[in-house]
Length: 119
Ligand code: HEC
Image (cartoon, rainbow, N blue to C red; front, side, top):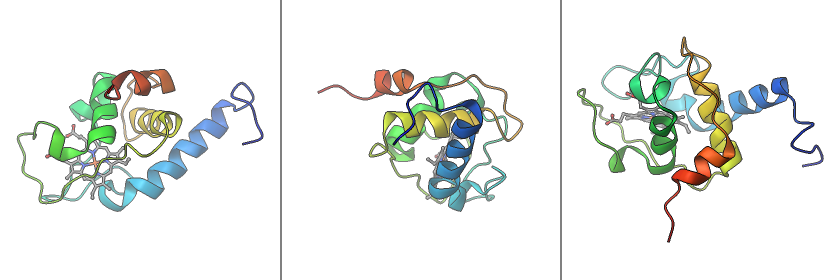
């Protein structure tokens, strides 16, 4: 990466978040965040997409098997994306929280690092 963190502007961060979402999440949650009935939820105004930042970070870090199931039953299982960097997870989480009719706050790399298990 040639650009420094400070030079990595808002538009570039949003474009990178979108690209990462489309690479890792859109196959299941769809490009518009609409999900697929019975298989995986939409991400539009959902508690763990738009609520406290820990919800979406934990979903990405731990996947659905480690998280409390929601009221609805979805046949698919969401894998863990813990192998992605704190920064990439933060960009994806921010993208989810600022698109699909969501208006949640930004997520930083530090927010993600704080929620990784320590051992
Ligand atoms: C293989 C399919 C699949 C992939 C890929 C996937 N998910 Fe999921 N996701 C699911 C399923 C299934 C659930 C529902 C889990 C449950 O509640 O039992 C879910 C739930 C969620 C939720 C919670 C929604 C709510 O109801 O509050 C969020 C947020 C989320 N996913 C974000 C993401 C993000 C961001 C990515 C990409 C890094 C991603 N998912 C990739 C299948 C997937």
